[in-house]
Image (cartoon, rainbow, N blue to C red; front, side):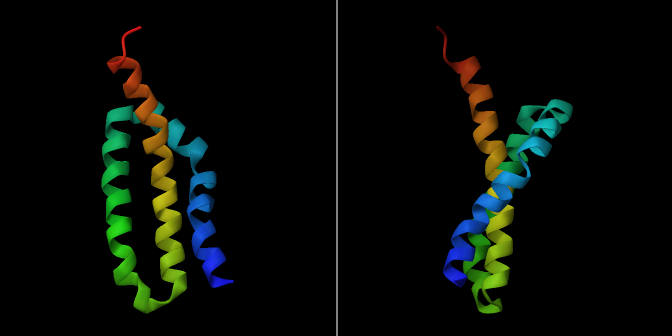
Length: 87
């Protein structure tokens, strides 16, 4: 059961913050949100092995955090591809 919670926790964060991250991008701009999201996502990925001794709840929290910031990476990369690809 712990394995299922750990694996699904990424999608909890992804699901919960989609609208909020979109509103933040409108307010602060896609570049700022994308930069923050990439740094935060990287830090949460690096921190997972260090959180493992504290139990699976710490890993679940990091995975939720990671999923929340992956939302903005997916959304904002499409915004930048619009400028890079000329049709």
